Length: 126
Image (cartoon, rainbow, N blue to C red; front, side):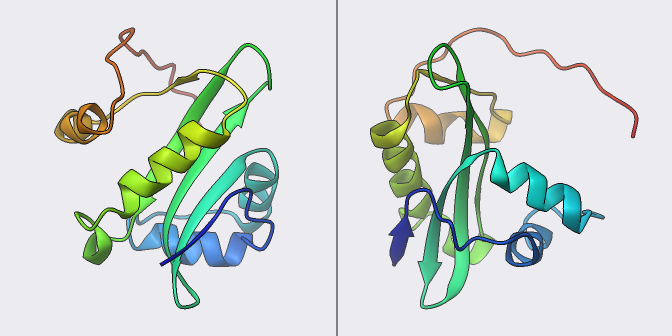
């Protein structure tokens, strides 16, 4: 497995193809390109195939958040997500706050993350 911190080779087309395998949806190429340019992208590749990605959005001083941690289903429970999370811990400029789906909380706890504030969301219609 090849891991890259601040992966400058990650492009919108590659990311959308990857995301479709985890979160099927209708993703805009230009908006995805813009989103990727604003985050620290930590990736995992098996040969040349993108199999995992963690993105950090940060102001560089006060606040940082993990926007998502995604691993292809066939690579889950093999340490890829744990390695991506460790690389995030090692390379973040700030403390990280993030939300979790209830079925994934044990993964984060197993990886040394502490439960913190309750999260809320404001839904914006597109």
